[in-house]
Structures are given as structure tokens and as C-alpha cells.
Length: 241
Image 1: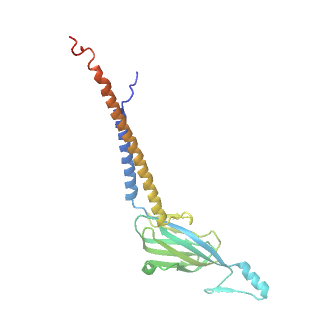
Image 2: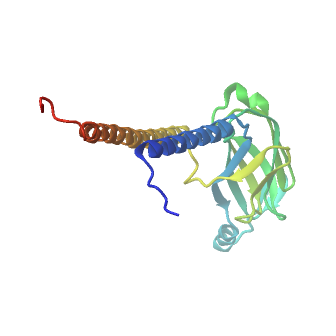
Image 3: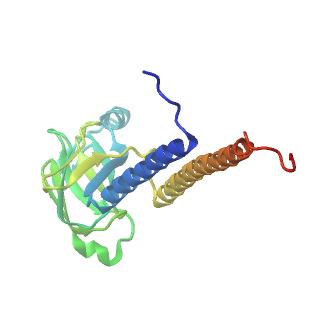
């Protein structure tokens, strides 16, 4: 069986259906992703600083020949550290009634926590609680793109033992590296880039479609030009009698 080659009309029809299907599928994916509520909280350790080291106390004692003791909130400490953590909502909807649990390791003691920066009236929506080696941050609500930075003073903290957890259903907790944490300006630039790529793709597909239409027109004119002389085949020339 010999397959006949596709005519330009059939090719244009097939390509048109493919383009329509591709754009319909892309539109459905975009609408589905944009319309679906995403509740995602990201966290990142901004800094860990050892402000009191055991070696420093030993050097003071050996240098001056007197015992040196550091008392914090009634407890003797040989090491003190500060841990600063940034909490950011990367959701596309508001998240309400959220509680974050911070862990500092089994040997640590959390003495105090404080908010970094001026939160204004929003501070009334936050509640910070400490207990032994853990702390809790209760958030009444947090808007998309909003951040809260908290710093803790911790005794006997071992680097790398900091953890964050939550138990709210439907909310995803994600670790965000400081170097790849996207700012609102970076997100806007990314959306602009995606829009430009989408526009370029659309222009390319429209160009291909226009080229096929142009070839269809040329083929039709060529067919008419070739068919015109054949209509006079077999007819006597005028004034032949």
C-alpha cells in the first residue's frame, strides 16, 4: 500500500490542531497551579555565633590565676551562643494559627528569644515561648512573602543541632538556603523572564503557522496556473476555419 503525501492543507490543519492542543494544555496547567492554594513555610539559619567559648574561660583562669564563672539566669554556663533564624511564608494564601517548634539539641538551654527588626503592630500577632532546650513561636497569621526573624540566646549549644518543626495539617515546611532564598524582586524578574519566553514561543509558533498559510496560498496559485492551459487541450484554435 502506497501512502499519498500530505497536502499543504492537511499539514496546516494538523499543525493548527497541535498548536491549539499545546496552548490549551499549557493554559490548563497555569490555571491549575495558580488557582491551587499552597501553604509553604520556609526557614533558614541566618547565623550561629559563639559569644562565649570554654577555651576563653580557661585562658582567663590560667592567665589571672582566679576562677572565672559566668552565671546566666541563675545557671552557670561555660559556652553561650546566639542563633538567628528567618521564617518566611512562600505560600500564595494567608496561613493562620501556625506554631513552629525550634529544637537546639539535647544538651542546650534556651535562655531568651527576641524578634529582630521593627515588626510594628504585627508583633501582637506573635507569641514566643521557651522551655529548657526548645522554643515555640505561635503565629496568628502570616501573609504571602512575609518574614519573621528571631534570635535566641542558648547555652551549651552544639553547632548543627538546630531544627524546626510544625504539625499544622496542609502546611509544608521547607528549608531554604540563604543563597537561593528568593526575594520579591527576584521573583518578579523570574516571572518577567517566563513571560518573555512564553511570548517568544508564541511568536515562533505563529510564524510557523503564517509560513504554512503562505505556502498554501502559493500552492493554490500554482495549481490554478497549471490547470488553466489544460482546460483548452483538444479545442480548435480560434479562427481555424
